[in-house]
Amino acid sequence: MKFGVVTFPGSNCDQDMIYTLETSLGQQVERLWHKDTDLKGVDFVVLPGGFSYGDYLRSGAIAKYSPIMKEVIAHGQKGGYVMGICNGFQILCESPLLDGALLHNDTQKFICKNVFLRPKSRTAAISKGLEAGKAVKIPIAHGEGRFYAPEDMMKEIYQNDQVLFQYCDEEGNVNDRTNPNGSLDNIAGITNKGKNIFGMMPHPERAADANLGNTDGKLLFDSILNNI
Image (cartoon, rainbow, N blue to C red; front, side):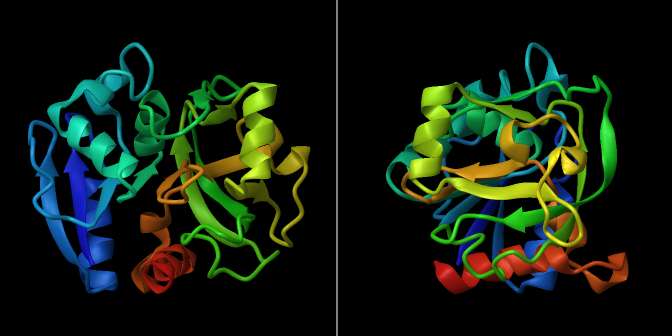
């Protein structure tokens, strides 16, 4: 599979993602620039974390107008695979590709720490390969990660098995105490109805190398590779 990693002005996790895909997973990676108008034949586009365009207006609100995003949106709408991590998730929610919005954390503070995630969707490629009910430890680093969607949209999200991960404790228990940012129902990531667009706030690429002391994030990438 050929992956493409997009770099926007202000991206700071693009090289982390490239390293994980190329070195840890042995995949072919194409570097994509925000001004590109060609996806260069990639099968799977990744929008990495960072602070695209300085997070002015709303996080991701300006990046969605980058030339590359016209191609990314067309790719996703045709059934091509797209994943947004942290700021990439925010960009996808600003675009037509994912439902909902990422609001300021309820603490109004930037949060940077390890959290535990419980995989929920059993039909999405990124989570279906994980052990049901077993928590994985993945770091977060965001100031606007509080997932929100109106009631009718939330109903559809659940009906279509679109919730990828929920914040939980080490034993996999989901409750208010394990919610770091006030997200509705502890939601840490969602997919679209077609299950080809993935968005999540935690950073699996920061937990995919033994040198980092945590390889739980690699389980998510392995699940993608094994189920696409």
